[in-house]
Image 1 (spheres, rainbow, N blue to C red):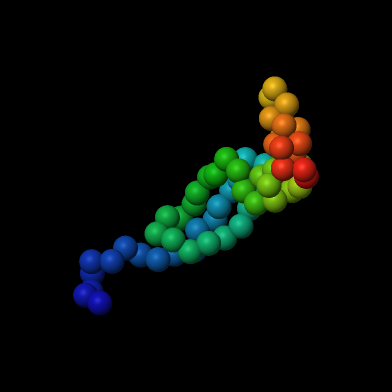
Image 2: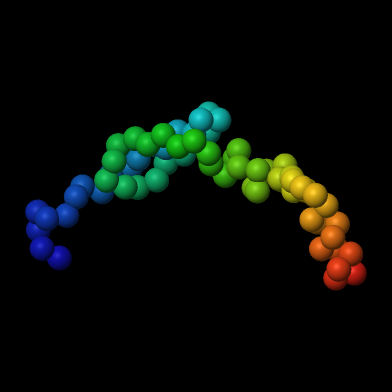
Length: 65
C-alpha cells in the first residue's frame, strides 16, 4: 500500500439513542445511531405483524398453514 494516502484507522465509540454504547474501528472518533441490535424489534423479539384487511389470515387459509 502507498503511504500517506489512507485515512487513520482508530477506535470509534458508537452511541445509540436507547443508551447502548459499543466500540468499533473506523476513521471517525465517535458516531451516533438511532437504532442498534439492543433496541431493534427484530433482535429483541418484540416484532409485530400489522395485519391490514386480513392479509395474513388470507395467506394462511390459501396455503393451509
